Image 1 (cartoon, rainbow, N blue to C red):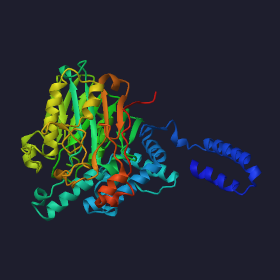
Image 2: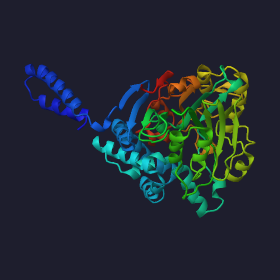
Image 3: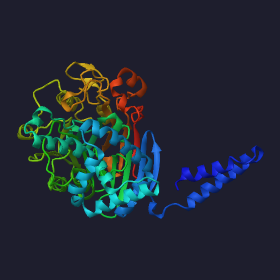
Image 4: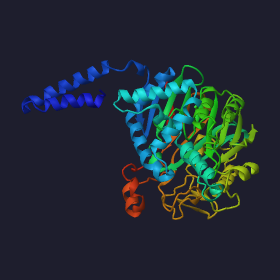
Length: 485
């Protein structure tokens, strides 16, 4: 029985007492209930904790893989249940496949490719959920973690196999996020700075609000944002105890998926936990590459002050490295061979979202050279200037973009006019902050603009099917989070 159910039982009992006796007896009962609950704390929680602050849920998880999973499932049970229910609504509409389809596939193709350590962690999540009265199995949690590579890469690959050439006409691999990493003469102190904002469907974005501090028995401590029930970051902003900083932006309109490969979410978690150099990161991410969730990874090593851009396709894995420079991303691929062989993206279209933002990144990189730090990073990740039109705007073409206010939508990845999607949160850190496992986080669009559900659905009733799960997303202030000591 959880805290709410336990207290509710006592409250209902004392509703039957006479009025004059009710209040003091109820207060006594509540105190007894709280005391009893505290004495019943599940021993598997160990030193785990949860704190809600400025739109974020901070959780500290530590111990064996199974106990880390249990703590995740237990402390975030309400949120995991809510997220899966939302996904069960959205996935069939956006991918044409339901939850049962995905569960059958991961049981057959994913589970045996997940490291035993992470199988244990996933199993622990189901046990934590069960302890809070929610019944999900390991396949549910695998689908939850792999939802992007499943719906946006695996399913389109099936269509391509059935109808060769269809990917060229209807390729909608996502193009989410805007990020940077800089070092040397580009930063204020010559050390690494990194920033990222997350673009996604708002129905998912409002739930991408967990900051996880994970202290595993082996490997690096992880400090990252994620969705409830994830074992990885998902939008991939990670500070590790090994001095590695990681973020990424997706390669839009990517095609290709290898069912025999290792799930991307497994490789991403493993790289964060066990990579102690950029070379380690590349080796882990390219081994067993399945093409799912193809990204431009931006990686830094605070021990050497080196940064890298790792463009991870299925067939092509070009890498750029420097100790004096800046790499940026807003969903364009840079390698001509990868673009030609593995995408349907048009790098010559100056009006699409990735290229519009690329142009802005080029200007921001030049304007802020030598000045980039945490405060500058916050400004950059909240930027709303369209370099093409020369104006500030709420559209798909700016760093902190909004599609819910854009009459053209974002056709590059299948978002129609005024689709409720865009920038939902942001994160920034520096080498100095990362040394102490700290980063700044902003829930809501970093531009400071709110999304209000009621007027949106009134103006755009075509999206009313989302109203049960899509709520207001307020822009909270930037907040400094740090791993618990």
